[in-house]
Image (cartoon, rainbow, N blue to C red):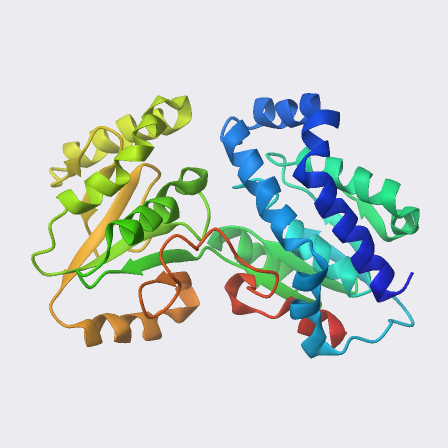
Length: 334
């Protein structure tokens, strides 16, 4: 199965995601939501639509043409340890391994083990040749792999680094995303920022969790733009996080601003809890740009007029690699 055949199979999968999956697999899609209540129908549809837009011939051409990939004479066995914070978050690694001509061994997250299997079953029905190149495992101990791609928390990353210390690997840690405003943002840009904050309940590393605002910025402008997401508070798990974090921070005598569905706190940290958004005022844009440069390894996305446009953090293209690590290059050099 050559590269063009692999690409064609994935483009057929992309077409399936557009409409057919809703008709053929409604029950399984619902079971994914039952398993993980964060995976609402809206969020599952958002993830499926995002992949439908990416799994196209023109996108594959733009992604892969610069690499001039050659067929792999001896496919390597690549272990992928997947996260489960948002629907299909590990699909890009899965896609990249197979497109590169290797074999994939998947350790799925217990919170996202329905959707990926559904897509893999469809992919194999489209191109049965993939079946011998895809396998699943529950335990990684005492198993040998040619390379490892693992995604998790900072704590699990330390474990991965130790356990796979002799292996070729990509180990991804917690990263966060920030937005830098200069005060001249349009209503449309602020509404885009709302998407960056609230998409997938803010659970992704590409979600904005911290704002840098010019001194004197009126927070009411943000709340107006955010209001269309006010129904988020009716989601039980999000609402519980809102109430819990509000109580914890108030008990600590912290100053909070709230609007009934989002807590905002002035804080220098990057990692805000669910249902809370940190912000920090600045006097000099140069200071913020210096912070971004010095903390690049902690940042997944920087949203501003200079970096990623507002509203685009959860719309990565195939060539937008997690943690900025080129996965195709890594696999090509094995």
